Amino acid sequence: MKICMIGGGYVGLVSAACFSEFGWSVTCVEKDADKLATLLDGHIPIFEPGLDALVDRNRAAGRITFTGDVANSVKDADLVFLAVGTPMRRGSGHADLSYIYAAVEEFAPHLTGFTVITTKSTVPVGTSREIERRLRALRPDADFAVCSNPEFLREGSAIQDFTHPDRILVGCDDERAKEVMSRLYKPLALRNAPIIFTSRESAELAKYAANAFLAMKISFINEIADLCEEVGADVQQVANAIGSDGRIGNKFLHTGPGYGGSCFPKDVSALVRTAREASSPLSLIEQVQIVNEERKQSMVTKIVRAAGGDVRGKTIGVLGVTFKPNTDDMRESPSLVILPRLMDKGATVKVHDPQGRRHAEAMLEGAVWCENAAKVAEEADVLVLMTEWNEYRALDLSAVRKTMKGDVLIDLRNVFNPADAEAAGFVYRGLGRPDRLLEPPVAKVVKANP
Ligand code: NAD
Image 1 (tube, rainbow, N blue to C red):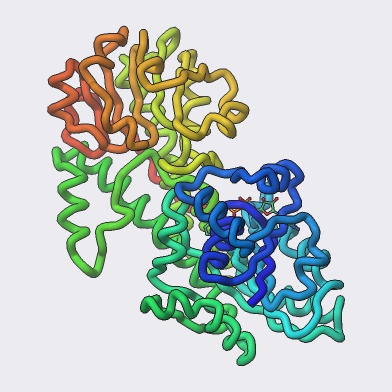
Image 2: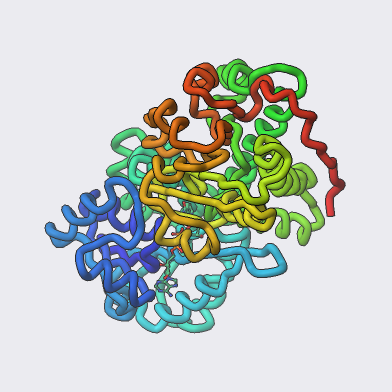
């Protein structure tokens, strides 16, 4: 089976590499000249654990190639995947489908034989139908079917997620396409991965509903964490107690500085727009957006208070800036809101991130970059753990504390044991733990939906 993957980003590259590992012949089309040059040079333009070795192996076996030439890649393909970006459209909150439709126009002239066109990108309900309509207008002679195959992988564990999925979701209204999709995923079906076939609309909506639900879990536990601080409970104990209930589940119950990344913010926003336009608003999910925005500001307030009420002239050391560990993705990272606000208040912000600097440096203007965590701590008044990279877990807190000017450690991921941090000489402040600083509560404004 021959596959053409259009888009060589996080999803396109991982999907292309995993399909080639199944034994399929994959051509990945990337139109960004720099990314393509990197790929043709034998390197990977993103950081995703294990991806370089997987691509190297399959490239050497001749099963995966990279190109900018869409015509030759599409003409013999049994399957054309769309894995291009669908970012948030400025101002409206809708998904921007311009990359999808531009790609459709590019490949349409080159279709030959029966071809299954499949969206791996996250696209709003009705997009498969619209792709089909446009293709029929462009190529009334072509033999094709359009499917939806949303991707559920997580950056940082993308290969494991792709090869061991909880389910594979295929929205498909065409029997021949269904047979092709079943054959494509047979290597995973043989390992008992369930394939769920639905209508195209159901598959498209299910992807958004899944992301909105997970975002809701994060906002829920963040609000519970705030409550824990006020009433003397510990959010980790609460999360553990409720997460062991199979109806709730223990995933996505970790409090933090708010959700970010390339998916949740834009997908929640697009779902809210879809629902409003369908005159069926999702008031619960709209509130999740508000809670998440407020979360970032309340983290700023927490840091300022722990620093003594004013950060002017103070140095804040920040460990990690990516939206989560094991990725270099900075899209919608909470650090992009929190750190500029601290700098606006007059703080000097020193940062380190194991992989994020390449993208983050231009996005965090004014921040001082350090080559490791120890340098971040040197002479800092306050140390903030923003992203829970493993290398920060192993920090020698006593040694770090001795190089600092101040003694406050703010742990926005609850990574450290408070007793260990205090034994190392820190005034420790986590999230959703009984507050040892005896500060007044951060005032919360409960806003109505816009
Ligand atoms: P990305 O921005 O990393 O990658 C998209 C790539 O497509 C870019 O490299 C871009 O240059 C390329 N591209 C755009 N138009 C092209 C064209 N016409 N021809 C060839 N290449 C083209 O985006 P991503 O994170 O991989 O996300 C892609 C889609 O998958 C989005 O809809 C996203 O919501 C969805 N998704 C992402 C994740 C994730 O964790 N990143 C998870 C599940 C689903």
